Length: 356
Image 1 (tube, rainbow, N blue to C red):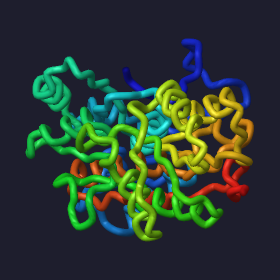
Image 2 (spheres, rainbow, N blue to C red):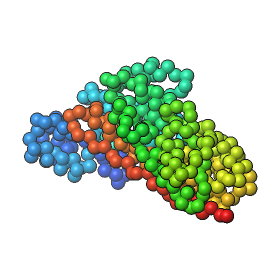
Image 3 (cartoon, helix red, strand yellow):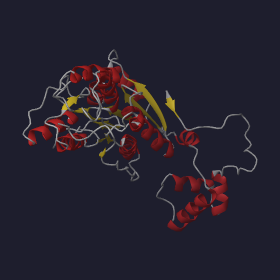
Image 4 (tube, helix red, strand yellow):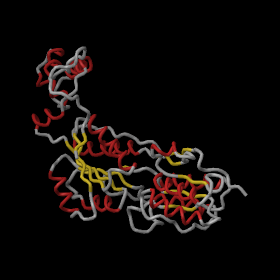
């Protein structure tokens, strides 16, 4: 699957009535009083251009609103301006929003974006080699074990960047990578529930990228750290997947426990299932049980009750990962790297004080 910008339907080469035809490189050259080869050198950061000429060309580009045609540039220069994303999922909110950030950043820089969906049945080495042979570099979304395994197997000579779970303090993935501090975010969410008077906080976990156990992963670690700091024994985490069905199954068990008055969920889809299970069991939210999700997926604000959750800037992570890869691909220029927003607790209706 290739992700590209929207294009106008129809095969007419004429612009719509009243719309100015896009400026060409020759239009820029004429406006600046230089050859189109000089304009090309300025666009591509060639050092052998006088400063005053470079400035004149840039002014003409700004005045005319010129935008380089990435496909034409690639054909003319032989430079591969495409990247491939390796991911195990394109539907879950975190993955989809990360892909959107990658697509926006790559399109703005004149790159095309290809996506290869990994499955457990894949020969990872063969899949990675095939993607690398396409040229242009790789971005790996390593939120889960399959993505993390793929990242570990990308050859060192292949330009690569990644979006990953927060690594353990003091360590790094060994590749250019970006991540959010969801460990601290989970800690803050748990502390918020404890501050509302709840004796403990149960955790419905997402699968971790580092192993099969539910107690592993930055969100689980942040939850556990908050409980330990408060002198509270951590209950056994529940949950076995990413989706609402998994949340519903975990919620059914928690709903039968009268001591379960606060639940932190590893993502908003799990929280959706937990809310439904509590409703079916006759336990009110937040009067009987408080629930906090994670990610701030678009639907979370429109649930009943609206979901208190942790907002994650997945699109920012995608943009930052592209910046890291571009810095490896365009070694003759300083590529800017976007800085994602920090995770933030969004207070809505689903969490409240414990009622005695």
